[in-house]
Image (cartoon, rainbow, N blue to C red; front, top):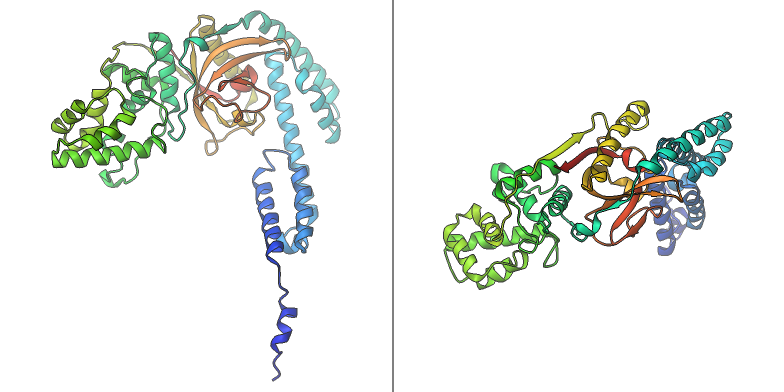
Length: 437
């Protein structure tokens, strides 16, 4: 048997430079991105970029990715078809609430591209519907803006307490004082305080996410509302709010176990999250607490001026929200019901909290959600106006993602973290409405 000399190995296994390997890796990453996003956004340019990158890699598309160029082209075409459906959906939704001119040109171009033969009649019908709706909205969509009477936009950052921030905004408006969202959340999730990362019942990681605005208000009312100045709600002292709270909890429990009243270090850490406490408060909490009560008692010490009010939080939950494009008639009926509830309260100058699919904040044409993909989020509607430029009624969204605007779809006019969202966009994504009587 003859063996090939080592000199032949490079010809059997061609070497690839590090630079070329990086290009091939980039092509694979682009392809993975296309697979994840082609049903949500147009990928035509990305597909062209991928083809160029594959050529630079020195391989064919089939060799590197296991698919050919025709398959990539079909993904690009499919992405445009899906965009057409989103444009059509925008046209349909806008026609229910106002002028359709924003989508008419784009709809016409896509309709021609994909052979929608009867698009002229369809468009004429929608334009007529939109003009009739616009006449109604121009009269009913009266201007109101309560944002100046609400706390400045806060940032929930790493903690999923959007419902508590919404609840705090509603109560701040009602009580004319800045209410702590963190206190509402900690009160709502007192089970988290009881088992905070302590392995109780076999659970090693505490869940501090999720909740309902109306229930949070009702539960907090029993203990009274804490002022924001006494228990700040935004991430503080750097890092992650939840991690900071857990670290303080561990430190406090150790102090309680030792019953040491040398509390300077503990006080320094506690002061970052509970600014109104003093050393004596911390010493008193250490003396009177059992381990599991440390954070709870520290919170109660911090909230020295609780406001006791018995508000009635009214909530309306939409059934069958996750219908996507499959049940437009039912959804249209629900849209009117929820629009009436919202508009009635805004007309009374009463802010409203809504549970909404937040993916639409990033991209107003993101596909309709399913139970597995919904970006469940709570915000406050702080105002309303009729936009003469677009012929649509719009709601002012007060979010809890800080004062920046770069996160939101460029179509939305934004300032200080609050943005105007067309009624048609919001109602498609809303499944819960809450307000305080």
